[in-house]
Image (tube, rainbow, N blue to C red; front, side, top):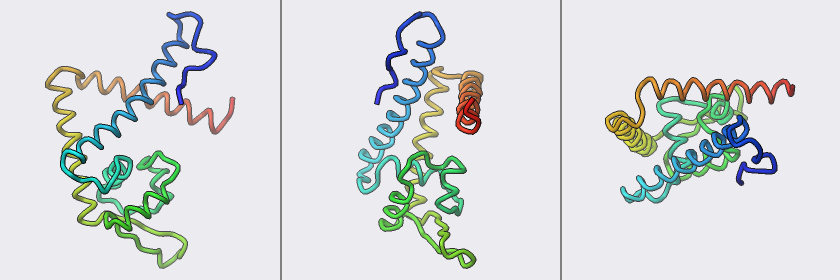
Length: 165
């Protein structure tokens, strides 16, 4: 789905076209990140896991969490978390254990196989961070400004959901 719609015209130097460009860039960057992760796993011959699942394993790291916590902590952005958790457990990337207190609640953590995937993604991100800095694509100040701006947008959007104007 493209974010360019009926309101993308108008004043080319105005805020709206720039906002739409930023939204489009965020969307493209997310898809590109998944492609980069997929490419790394294809290069290594790891074909049983997809990029979304690998990113989920990376985000969980050494934590033990419930499915509900995955979204609330920002570890998983998709809508099909249960599907991916079941697949990761079935493929041996995660352990799951039902809570003794609340039998409906399941806690998950990475297996050795899952930690390997997490480490591959971590090494990939370390290489990228080093390359971005060495090639002067981004400075520390630049990445801090990007993060600060994106956090402000995140807060604004969250407020829109909660308070609807």
